[in-house]
Every structure is written in C-alpha cells, then in structure tokens.
Image (cartoon, rainbow, N blue to C red; front, side):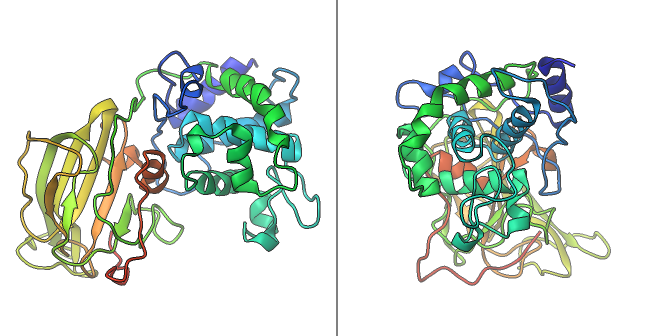
Length: 366
C-alpha cells in the first residue's frame, strides 16, 4: 500500500487537519509565527489518536519503521494543537537522538525516540518507550519555551533536550522538513481545518491551572480549570462573536433544574452553570463555564480580545470558585471539537497558569 493510501486511511479515522497557506512550507518561513495553527478533533480518552499501520513504505531513505515513528510524532503534535514548525523540530530531534528508532536504551539511562532520561524527570523507562508518551513530553516542554517558533531549529531542540552536542540538530532540519511534508501531503482531507488562529490572544484569567484536560482520572474533562477567586473578571481570550449564553445546572439524580442563582455542588449538580461560547476566526471556539452571574455580553455581540465577559463563580457542577476554560476546533461545540487549551494557548503566546498568592486551591468539576 502506498504512503498516500496509508495516511489517508489513518486520517479518515481521526479527522486530522490539512495545512493551509500552501502546505507545510507556509509555516516555516519568515518569523515562523505559524500562519496556521493545526488542530484536530480528539477522542474522549487521552491516548494515541491512531494505531500505527503494520507496514509503512520507505520515504526519502527512511525505512517503514522510521516513517511510522515520524507519523506518530506528527499526529501527536497535531492532537496537541502544536503548530507545524514544532513537528519539524520534534522529528529532527528524533532523527539526531535515535535515528527515528524507538530504542530500548542508550547513553546512561536514555530511552526511546528522543533518548529522554528517567533520571532527569521525563518519565519511567516504560513510559518513555511509548512513542506517543515521549512525543507528548517533548511537545509539552517545547511550547513552554518563549519564542520557540522564531528560534533556529537547533536552539529550540537544545532548549528541550539540553544535549551535550547543542549544534547537532541543525543538520537534520532539511531531512525533517522533507519527511514531515511528505507525510502531511499524503492525502490529508479538507474541511477539518482550524486555520488561521488570528491573534492576538490573552489569558481569560491569570490563575494557576488546576484539573487538566482529559486526564486518566477524568477522561471527560474537556478543558482546564483556572483557580481564580470569586468575582475575578473573565476576559475574552481573543476577538470573536458570542455564540451561546446559557444557564446549565441540573440535579444530578433527577435532571430537574437546579438554577444558576446559587452555587452548584460537586455531587448533586451537573452542568457548566452560567457559561459563554465565543466563535473566533478559523473555526475556533472558546468556552467559559461556572460564571457567578449572568454574563456581561449578549448572543451575537462582537467582542474584542481581553474584553470582560463575566466574573468567576461556582455555578453548575463545581466544588468552588474557578473558571473552566475550553478551546474547540472546527466550530464543533461538543466533545469531539475540544483540544487541550494548555499547548494551544502557549502556541498563541498566552500561556495559561500563574503562581500568584491569590490563586485558590484547585476545585474539581466536570
């Protein structure tokens, strides 16, 4: 089976995006600020978005095993909404560290595609032998680095890896770009693109991140919790148009209305409480849940980035004041459209989280 057929089969199952602006090359020139932000719909479970085909055809001198590992890296980056520049950096890094092979060992206690070391906090040896886990760890570190998209590839890779040979990654930029371009060009379907993520973006509140996106303990948690005190202003993360305003709070046992004129309960209540959905260019949508009172905006109203839209509360399924924040792609308001807000917001230059003394203890909610 050809590479085109294999990749088409994979993406037909997981609905991976296409690249805009003429393919991957549009992401790599100039300031590398990413003309498009790739995004995918994700399954409810925080697992690999696809099963690697048994046999991949060789591409550009890389054998089937190596191409399969590169495809795993790329698809993991897409699932985490990391811009395409990040995929090239990650693939080039794996080319240098392991030759795109999932190695069982290496220098000292190094393991896997990226030769990450358990002794340096990357994870257990068993975890690092999982290409999806290893790729996630690489990308989640990469997007925390300031201006990583504008750095030379070798500098960005070194900032993640802290290698004894910091200049070694540079030689792999062209091979990595060719391989990523071949894989992403091999029949990816149109119509499932969130492109571009028009800026600027800002944090909806400045607060520590509590419960994360679709953790193993909470696979149905489609956003992140930002632990801000009651009454904290919530701001639109980017410019857009208000799509939805709703009170969503019902009794867990009966489904009868609980109402949003009082706090919810972590056991007795279900729903988002007072919430707002905002549509943004490129099929992106943001959601803001558990507002303390009716929002300050109306359906159909245009909003500017940073404009106040409500205040933090604890309505709906909530154990204490906080903002539950979601990012969706493809204009899909349901779970299939949700992506992890943490890497997405980091890629927009507005990373979530702060260690301010006013941040409350993390509550838990749906």
